[in-house]
Image 1: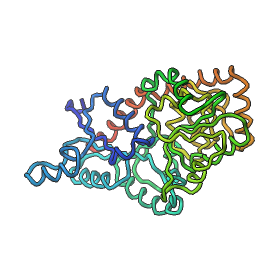
Image 2: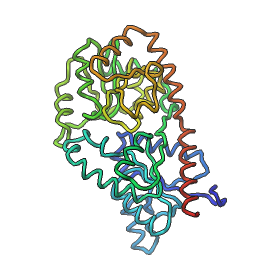
Image 3: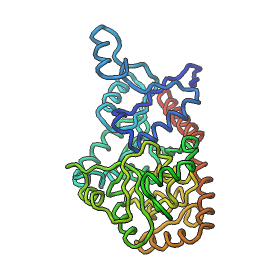
Image 4: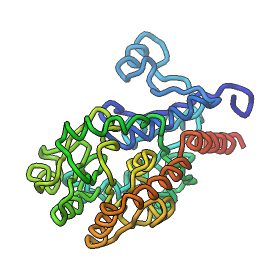
Length: 360
């Protein structure tokens, strides 16, 4: 129940969700919805009566309401649907929460031309995020990036979380996925979309400097909008690198690999890191600011800056199963601090705060 004893209807909205199923944003929203399912709030996932703009238009033509009823809007993508919700919420005096999963910095290096249009992306995000009553983001690092734009509403970090239960059983998939992708011995792996900013060049460069198997589990584009570096590397990778493309069960990636390598250059939190840790994998990270607030070098991961440091870290882990085990056990504990209970607590606290401000 809400602060006044009435059931609070929360619009938890991700537009074009079907097109984002391969993204971290989709995973983060799924985590939100699973967490909130055990809360006092009643969730609505589409602002459109009937579930789509087409159905809403048909209802409007018949004289019915075209927009669902909700008491608070929480939008997760900076697209035209969110703009429409923002305008509707403003007209009705409904509190608006916008989740900043995207920044100019992490948009760059994703697709062909994404870096070049960065200034325009920043202006748009600043305008849209500033329409909210409260902006949520995955980390304090991201909050500082947004504040520098500047984004004017209050900004509140909320973890993306990790659904450890959904990853259970990954060990049983080790041999099936190794056979499927012809992987043997010590396997260094990455998970997620293959983007230049995710460090694919470092990933392949390390493969060329070692004799280990490298596997990147995740989708990639090779069409005209693809980053040229990504297109070149996935079409002609080093001999010991496998780009698997989309896999239907992400648990297979965490089961098949031995060490998770995440050499990303920019990140807002890194859901794949939390998932790897929840599965007990030893993780090697690039030492970037966002990871300082979540992970500790030598305790639950190894952090590196140069290609030589990455190579040395992989060599240490390949020859020290005890170190891999210790890092993995500590990583499980770290991931546990980002469980769905914490996601629910942080979201509910944010919702209460923005509704209290709206009625003050």
